[in-house]
Every structure is written in structure tokens, then in C-alpha cells.
Length: 465
Length: 74
Image (cartoon, rainbow over the protein chains, first blue to last red):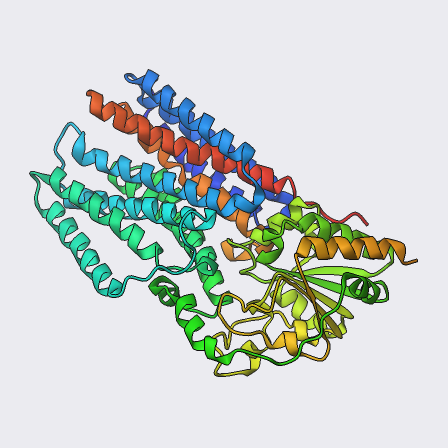
């Protein structure tokens, strides 16, 4: 143990907290983001070294063991993960962070030398334990759904809202008991953990696959809040500040996501969106005629266009066609055709996921446009190519008040002069609503696997001169 | 501050802030230095390992992603 006074310790924590804030600020531009992230990592390193030096007179070998185990697993996960699997990985990291916060808070009751009776501390323990445990199991279920281990369809228990309410009341009751009973607090703590773990499973299970961006963002926020809770237990200012920062950033992202889907957070959390609307739309099966075309025809249309906008959705990632799309875009640019990408906020399985996938395929970030930037440009665009996106391009979200997706912000693909839609079949999107875009006079459907279709276009385009 | 982050960087923002929430690692180190029995030691080693996965994995993967973001060459 090195003698670091509490004043110096707090000063170091304050510096680390400031570094985190600067680091997060630098994340607001692609130019400075990488340095910002490294700065945050440096702040973390300083805080960890200072803490280890101050506190470790005993158990240093165990602390190092823990650091080595965690560091190794963390590096391996980061090294081998595929970009398409990023949402799962973030969900997994959330789970670990939440669990660690819960454990740190529980320590106060289970192993602390002096019995703590201060109600504020006990309440903080209860709070961090609840949030940490919910984050742990909720994130694991989210991980399972994203990985395809657990069904992505909303899983609905008939009276689930009643069951959930009972468990929520149970959690609150046990938490209150824990705060007012100084003795036997550990039994209440175990009960609290069990109920919270169960609650985490039950609230994420009913949420459908397409709502995952919201869930992952929310759980991200929870992992921060649990950390802040653990900070209150230990009276550690750095944990409180950093935890609150992460909690706030997660909440803001959650809000951005729910706004992009035109739904309230409550609506997402109550779940079952997909399940309900599928039944309502099964009776509006559609036999309106559509125009279909071949890769060759599509290549022809592109070759004589002046401007093209790609509209990628999750289907692009499923087909692993990011690299092909970049190749096609390069060929078009060689012909002096302007190329842009329109990215809907909920394209992909987590906020900003599509941008990462396209960046991996070497698409420059300044060609990726969000909703507000691109929507005014569609009516000046010759060809819009929709690849594996559906609901976010449905014009009935603007016009049809009876549509389940009415009011959702969409990409105004239908304003382009010509629309080409790459799609496997006429199946409807997640909302279960048929897309009016497909039946427009200007729309051409190119059926098949997106990767094959784009490769076909590339081949054809090379031959046109 | 967070609302100024463009959608393009939302995933790195999430994984980066996620790594910061691993700051609970210092809490885990503090409790580990206070424990004198076997069960408590196991408890704290688990907490340290989980938090370290969060910190190390989170910062590395964010760095890896951000390295891919390139501006178009004109």
C-alpha cells in the first residue's frame, strides 16, 4: 500500500472524470472520435492504477488474477468479433458491467466488516443490486435474441403484465424490508437478487427482434445507473459521475431510437408489437401487380443515371452484401454518378449499426446521410436502390392514418424518379404491413439474394461502356 | 453533449460509454482489498474479472470500429 491521502485520491478521481467528459465530447466527430476513446481509456488506466496503489495491502495477487482473467477474455472478444455481431457483444458487455456493479454493492451487506445500518447506504445497495441484476439477465436475453439462440419473435405469456406487476411489487417490498431491517439483511438481499434476475428475463422476453436497438440502448443506460448506485454505496465520486454519464447517454440514445420508430418507451417495453399487428394485416393480403426486373435491366438504369441513393436495411447485413454495395458504388462513381447512402436511425440491430457495417466495407462516412440530411434530396435523385429495408420506406407512414406505422419518420424513397427494390420475396416487414412503395409505377422489384443481385449488377455494369 | 453525436457514431458512442461504465472496476478493487475470507475473495475476483472484461473489451472494440471510419478521398 502506498500512502495516498484521500485528498489526492479524490483529485485523481476528479481528473479521471474530466477526462471521461472530454473523451465523450470528442466522440461527436469522426475525426476526433478515436482520440477521444483513447483518452477515456487513459483516464480509466490512471484511476485503476491510483486505486490499486492506495488500497492493496492485502489480496494483491487476487486482484491481479482478476485483472488478467478479465483483460484476456475482453481482448479476445474484441479481437474476434464480427461487425455484424456488434450488438450482441455490447449486450454481453452490458451484462458483465451490470453484474459487477451489483456484486460490488452486495459486498457491503455480505462481507463488510462493520454492519451498516445507515438507511441511505442500504437503499443504495438495494438499488444497485436491483438494476445490476436486471441488466445482467435482461442483457443475456437480448444477447440470445440477437444471436438467434432465443426466438426473436415476441414471446408472450398470457397474463404477463399481471405477473410482472406482482414481481415488481415484490422487489419493492423486499427492498424496503432490507432497508429497515438491520439484521438478517443478507436474506433479503438474496431474495432481491433472485426476483430482479427473474424480472430482467421477463421484461426482455416479450420484446421483438426489430425493437432490439431500443433494448440495447436502454440496458446500456442501466449498466451506467447500476455503476452510479455502487458509487453511492462506496461513497466513491468517480463511480457516481462516470455511472451517471453513461446512464444519461444511454437514455438519450433510447429516446432517439423510440422517436425514430414513433413509439413510446412504454409501448416498446410492454412488447408484442410484431405479434399483434401480424394478425391484423393477415387479412389484407395483396394481389396488386408489381413490376419486376433483372440485374441486367437494373444495371442499365444505373448506368444512365446522374445520381443514385442507396437505402440499406438490416437485410443488407443479413446477406453480407456491404462489400458488394461499396464495389457497385465505386463503379458508379467512376462513371461520374453521384452516390449517397440514406441511413434510417433504426436500420440495423443497434443505434448506428448500419454505419459501422458500411464503414467496415470502406464506405466513406461523409457519404452516409441520416434522415434529415437526405429526405429533401430524393426528389432530385434519379435512382433510389432499397436493399433489405422495408417499413422505413413505406409511404403510408406519411399518408395512411389507419396504418400501424402511421407517423413513423420514413425515408422518402418514393420521391425519387426511379426506385429499385432488392428483396427476397413480397413478404411484409417487421410491422406486418405491406409496403405501398412496391406497387408504384416507378418501382421495380429485383427479387433474390441481395448479394447475388448486386454482384449481377456489378458484372453487367463492367460490360456496359 | 450526447445529443450532438451524429447517428454515424452511435454504435461507437454506446460501446465507448459502455467501457466507461466498467469504472465500477475500481469499486471492485477497493472491496477486494478489504476481504479476509475465501468466499469473499472469490466474490471480489469475479467482480474484478467481469468489470475488466467490460473495460478492456469495450475500449478495444470501440477503437477497432473507429479505425474503420474514413473520409472519402477527393
